[in-house]
Image (cartoon, rainbow, N blue to C red):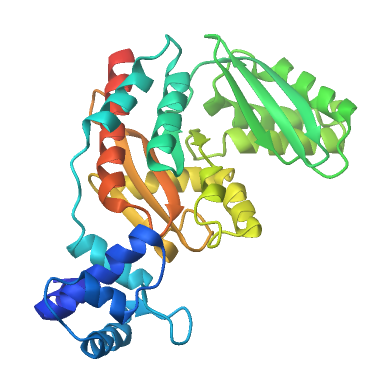
Length: 354
C-alpha cells in the first residue's frame, strides 16, 4: 500500500468529505476555500470551528496550503495527487466531445501530420488547454533542405522529403550568423544528404564536415551542426511535436501564469530532449497518466499539470503520445476521458493509414 493510500484510508468520513469539498471547490473556481464556504457545501451540519480544526489537521498532513494569512485553504500538490489517485470521479466522454474529435479526424484528405494537427486543435479547444501531439518519426528520404532567417537568434529549417511532405523546424544558430552562412550551410547539406533519411544524416554530415573543413567556414559549420542536432541527435528518435492552443495558457488563470513563466514553458516546448521525455513518460504506464506540478519533469514551468496518453500502431507498439498541459486546477474528471479517447482515435488513424 502506498503512503498516499494509507493517508486516505486513515481519514474518517468527515475529514475525507471536507478534503474532497476543498479540492473540488478549488478545481472549479481556483479560489481558496474557507470554513464557512465548506460548511455550506456539506450534506451534514458541521460547525465552522470543527471544519477549521479538520483543515488544520489536513494542512499538518501536507495536503492543504494556506496562500495568505487568515485566508482559506487550497490543495497542495500532494493533496491534488491524493485526490486524483483516490477520490477523482472520471466522467464518461460525452457525445458532443466525441463527435468534435471524430469530425476533426474526418476533415480533409491531408497526410497524417495535418490530421494530427487538426485533432490537436480540437483537443485544445475542448479542454481549453495547450495540446501536445508527438508524431511518429519521419523515415522518408530527404529531397531538399533550406534555411530561412527569421531573427538574429532564430532560423527556420525547411525539410522537403521525397514523398512530398514538408517539415519546418526552428532552431537557434551560432551568434553572428549571416545570410551567406545560411546559404553555404544549405548548399553543403544538399550536396551530401539528398536521398538519405534523417536517421542517416547526423553520421554522414559529421563525416563530411571532417573531410571538407575547408569548404565551409566556422560559422557555417556551427550552424550545420546545430541545425542537424535539432532534427536528429545520435541515439535519439526524431519525433515531431505539434503544440496547439498555447494562448489558452494566457487566457486561463492569468493570475497564476505570468508572462515570464509562460515564456519558460514555450522554450521548453521547443527543446528536443523534452520531446523525447514526453514519449518516455507514457511508456512507463498504461492508459492516461497525470503529472501534477513538480511531478511534471517535462516542463520546468511550476504550477502546471500534464495529462498524457500514448497511442499505438497496428502492431500495438507505442509510436507517439498526446496530451494537454495547463494549470494544476485542470478539470481532470472531464479531461482524462477526452485524452484517452483522442489517443485511441489517433492510434486507429495511424493503423488505418500504415
